[in-house]
Amino acid sequence: MPGWYYDKKELRSTPSSQDGIDYKTEMRYRKEGARLIIDTGSKMDLGYNTMATGVVYYHRFYMFHSFKQFPRYVTACCCLFLAGKVEETPKKCKDIIKTARSLLTDQKFATFGEDPKEEVMTLERILLQTIKFDLQVEHPYQYLLKYAKCLKGDKVKLQKMVQMAWTFVNDSLCTTLALQWEPEIIAVALMYLAGKLSKFEVVDWIGRTSKHIRWWDMFVEDVTMELLEDICHQVLDLYSQTDANNTPDSPPLQSQKATNQPPPVSTQRSSNGNEKVVSPDQPPPVNVKVPPPSSDVPPFPYQTFTGAPPPVASYATPFAAPMGAPPVVAAPPHLTGPPPGPPPHITAPPPTVFSQYVNHPPPFTAVVPPGAPPFFSANAPPPNQPHRPYYPPPT
Image 1 (cartoon, rainbow, N blue to C red):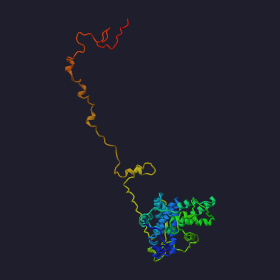
Image 2 (cartoon, rainbow, N blue to C red):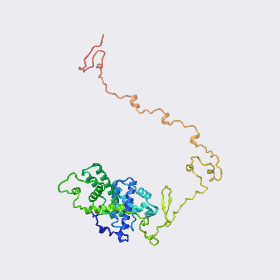
Image 3 (cartoon, helix red, strand yellow):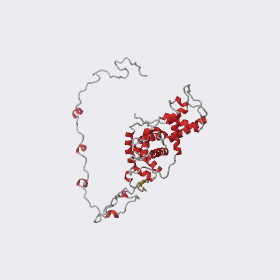
Image 4 (cartoon, rainbow, N blue to C red):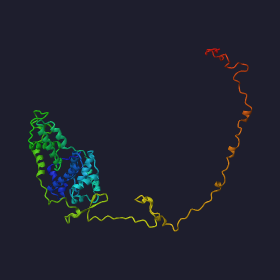
């Protein structure tokens, strides 16, 4: 798998910096794109893991591409769209764009172009190739909860410290900490910062041994105080930054370098009720109207919206003369006369098929020999049946 951790020197020599964007402006672009992912995901009830994964994709993407080449808001929506599928919380692309549209101004949303969905879907293939299909990302959240369960002390203060550290982890997504350190180190540093601010001092923890000087020595090794303080300062710098109103919203597009002013845009309502951005440079849509039917074609009953039949006069126009009564057609000959009698094979008597056997029966073998008594005489049992007892008839 590729290495996704960079030092500070590499973070200052990104494609955006080589494209003429200074470091401060690039950090602002990263912050604004990450904030859009978090705000859009929160509005769509996505999990914190999904939003964090999308932000990590976003930061990794711009280590290989410039903000001038790929608008940050389109990339942010694309990263959130891919992260939703990876974290098994998928959302439709059109829903993500619609939610982002409600959070952006018309000028910022104009970077999506004429077909925002096609822009995001096309960029997804570039994003997958850029991050080398390394989709699984770990975040400090799980380590934060794991480490907090091992700490001893006041439960109320511990809970307050964990909540504050969780907030710091959320805000750290707007920095490049995910490109500098592993999530375990970020979790330890932000728990250390939250403990200092909430005045929660860790004096004991589960699994403590003599070689553990500080509580985080049990989880990560060779973490110095200088490293923790550097991470804490990068997060605290977020709260000291103020966005000036006169800063440009995005790098100028290639077609706007001469004027350095975005073209005015306007919104219109489409047929389905959604707003769409219309630029004066965009040619107006061609309205193709279907010509009405000619007057000699009468309307059909199923085309009436009221359900009532159309007037009868509309059906009389195609005919030159009124229609009279239908002509009288003579009945065919086989229907004019009386019905014929039954066929000959029904009226004649049945044939004598076995006449020779009826008139002269064959000499069948007699069952009882001549002169022998019958099987059942008046007072004698049947012959040759000794198993049946004989009971004389009553007198």
